[in-house]
Every structure is written in structure tokens, then in C-alpha cells.
Length: 200
Image (cartoon, rainbow, N blue to C red; front, side, top):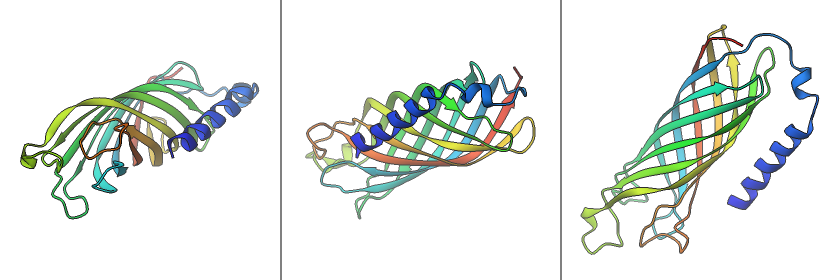
């Protein structure tokens, strides 16, 4: 799954960058200097071990600095919680901190974008079935990455609605029940609002 998603992201990025007319085709209208987004987040995780797939709910927020009309730098912070996984009281909370570039298509009525973010995940499990005392659980930090994109729909000059953002979410959280690479493949869906500041 990871290789497939990465290939899609690389193809989309290559297609965008190879289109030399993209920036020139966009209107000369002003664009925000910075943006702040607040989202509801749903995740579907595949830990690759004995627990099986499970879902999580939470929220995320991000700050975006627009270098120009096309390229942005993004800092994305989020957290999601899973109470039960296939009948197991997992009580898992994961906090992600991700950073990276975003490429925007700024049209008049909407702004599609793609992004590649890397960083880490701080996790806290109240239950790990691989431990002799499962109630001790485990906490720690691990590598994380998100590759995907979404669409923003401007409502006013300073307020935008985000109907969806979908990312492949990868974490490498060590666990005695995970696969040998400690690789968890996930899907992250987000929707929310965006506030714009300044102009360029």
C-alpha cells in the first residue's frame, strides 16, 4: 500500500512541476501570506500485527506560510484517539507533528493541493497484549509521514471551507504485536475551516 501511494504522490508532483505554464495560467489576484486551518480528523489504521485494523477520531490544526502562489510550507499538528480495537480496550492516543511542502492550484472558486509531510508521532497505549502486564501499555515517539492532498473552497477573502483532505498516514511505532518493520499503514481524512492572514 505504501509503495502504491508514494508512486501516486510522485506522479502527481512530477506532473505539476513539469507543467511550466501552471503559475502563469493563474490569475494575478492576491493570495494569503499565511493560513491557519482547524480540522476534524478520522483515521483508519492497519498496525500489521495481531490486533487488526481500527479507527480513530480526533482533530488537527496547521499553519501554512505561502512562499508564492503555488508553494507553501506547512506545520501540521494533530491527535486522534482509539478507545476499542476489535473488542480490545486499546485506549490509544497518538499525537502527530508533521512538516513539509504543499503545492497549490489557486483557482478563483477552489484550491486543490498536494503535500508531503514528515515528522513524528507521540503515542500512548493503555494496553499492549504483547506485554506480560498489558495494563502497563507503552508510550514513546516514532517516525511518521503523511502524503496526500485536498481541496479548499474560499467563502470570503479571509475564510475558507475544507470539505476534505485525504492522506496516507504512515507511522513506525514499535510493538511486540507489530510486523517486523514496525510499520503501520493508515488513512487520514480531515475536514474543517481555514483562516487567511495578510496578502501577497
